[in-house]
Length: 71
Figure (tube, rainbow, N blue to C red):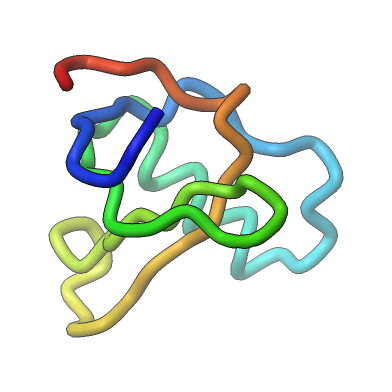
């Protein structure tokens, strides 16, 4: 997985304790995004403005919860 790949969020990390964060992930579930960055620990950055309607919103998620749609 690399920056620019199209991915689909296929799962919600089970260890999310913060309810608003968990709800945000649930809203994004099944949607497609473009990988915008990968951080130092390998989590993928996804801009989720199209889901939340708020400019600059993003999430970081482990690649195990993503499916590559296209490279």
